[in-house]
Length: 68
Image 1 (tube, one colour):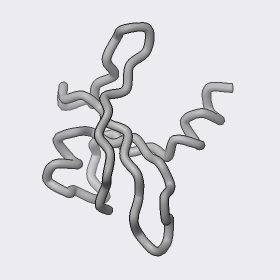
Image 2: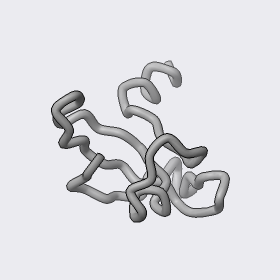
Image 3: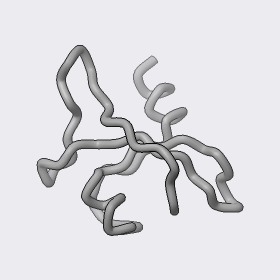
């Protein structure tokens, strides 16, 4: 997946981090399967365009639904 935005996700000033210790960013999918679908991903995994690994990846709407 490629992305167009990169903002670090925070919660009351605390930065969320992946298990690897790197922060998490919110990105936008540009694939045909999920056009313009927002998701969170580990910045390290995003920079290397890693897929199907153990780094943080979560669709924003799923994350939101899980918190409610």
